[in-house]
Structure formats: C-alpha cells, structure tokens
Length: 371
Image 1 (cartoon, rainbow, N blue to C red):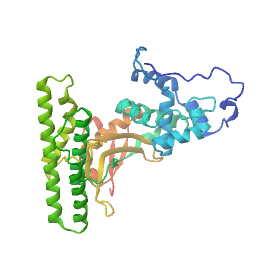
Image 2: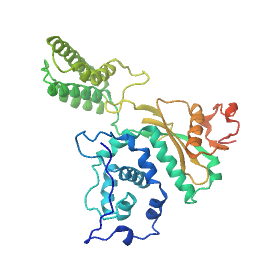
Image 3: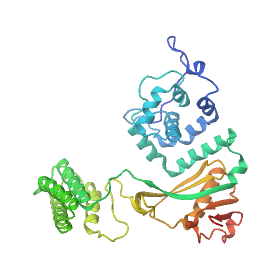
Image 4: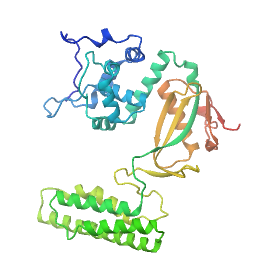
C-alpha cells in the first residue's frame, strides 16, 4: 500500500493556515522551503507496496516521517520526545508539510524504529547528503570547506544492561519458557522459582566478595539453561514426527542458537554474546579512566574542519583498527558531498593507514595529530 499524502487544498472556515500566521523568517520556515520534498517522496516511494488490496492502516506520509527524523537529530530527542514536541510546536508541523494546526499525535513513537529499519544505510546516506546540500544552499558551509575534513571513530553505546553471565543465562531461559508456553509445548520444568532464588543468591555473593559461592551458583544456573535447551529440542523433534502443521524448528532456531552460544562461550573468548536483543554488541576498550570499556558499535564520523558539519557516518561491525577505516570514510564523504577531500586530519590512532600510498587517493593529504 502506497503512503498517504498530506492534503492542504481544502480551506477550513474555523481555522487559519499556518503559512499565514507563522513568522516567514523563522529558521524552520526557511529550511522547509530549501528541502526538495517532492524528490524525496519519489526516492522513498519504493519502501511501500503498490498493491492497494493489502489490508491494514495506510502508511504515513513520507514527508512526515523524514521530517520527524530530521527534527529528532536536529534537537537530539528520543522517539517519544520528538512526537510529543511535534504536537506542541506549529513550526515543526509546518516543516513536516501540515498547513493546519494538528491536535493529536501524528504517529506512534514505535513507528520511527520500524521506519529507520526500512531505510537502510543507502537511504540514510541520501538524507545526510540532503543536509549537506541544504547547508551549502543556505551558505552555512562553502564548497571549499568540504575539501578539509576531520575523521575520527567513536562508540555508539547500545541500550543494554551491563552484561553478566547470570542475567544472560536467566534471560535465555525465560525466552525459551515463554516461547514454549506460547506454542503449547509442555516442558518438564520451567525453573522459574529456583532461578529467581539463584539470581538473588548470586547478587548477594558477589556483593560480599564470596566468589567461590557465586561461581557455584552461576554454574548451577548454567546447568538449568542447558536442561531447558535440551528439553525444548526433544519436544520440537517429537512434535515434528507427529506431523505438526507449524514448523517449530524455524520459530525456536534464533533463541536456541543464542542459548547454545551463551553456554559454549568462555570468559576470554572473542566475539562474545553480550545481549540477546542486540546480538551485534561488541565490547570496545576506550582506554579512559572513567570508563574503560563501552558496549556498542564502532562508528566512523567525518566532519568539516571549520564548521563541524557531519559529511559521513559509517557503522563498523566488529572492532576494526582505525587506520583501516580511513579510506572507506573518505570515500563515503566524497560520495555524499560530491567534492574531493584534499586534507584530512586524524589522531595518532590512524598511524599506518596507508592512504597516501594508494595511487587512487594521491589527491588527499593526511595530517596525523602531533605532526
């Protein structure tokens, strides 16, 4: 189903138009006229199905969704905060294409998460290139300023608790038990009460520095998770032999794979599983006194040297060496801006980058901190 359109053609005798009442020199009014909304609607129209026979509520307008995303990043707000602020701010409503004041929430905040997942990295680059073109058009940045860039990496923390073995084991057991109950699988035992008692004991042992008792309790909890995993696998195999119409193997495969990975991983293993709902989380050493480690995803960011305008942003799976990420970061920045970068400034973590020895990038000069 195609996205709906914002229709401001019909006059309202009881309400005036926002375009007649708001300050035309306000920054949001000026910005709304600079963005090519029609081009974006054509670019993002293939996110939706063209078949009108598909049931469900019609999708929200593309301008509304992209406008809320831009407002969210412009003011550094959460999904709930930007939706609540949209209702209270008429300038935000006009920026998103509405010419009459709206009194209700435009979307559910959870819709933003699903829309971001639909976009993907390529369309996010399209939105980033849009911000750069608007900055050049408004003369906030000159074209020559795009030739000098600062490149650095940071960590984007994920929304997870501090990972501990006991919490991860119990969460895996809880997910298996709930999924089994949902699909009518009768387990031998769900271990709800004993797991709750073990978690309380482990917390007390660790607080009292009684490490031997804590390790024994964690081992007991790990054994319980292994029992539940094997019990679920047996019941799935027996139901498939009987000839169940539902393919339980595909339903339980993700959580069973995660549970087995938790049971198999050791303390010093690499690429450990730190969260069940965010399996791509990595433990990255920051080397700082106040926070030695952060759990999230490594990100490479390129900004203009003078104004600090972001011209490239890349998520880096794993924990690659900074020097190996410099060339892709420069190529991404040039793709988004359409301008070749002549000078790039980096810190000492980029030593051995090998960019200047590349014959295809002989137009870029790299300056390392302290040079």
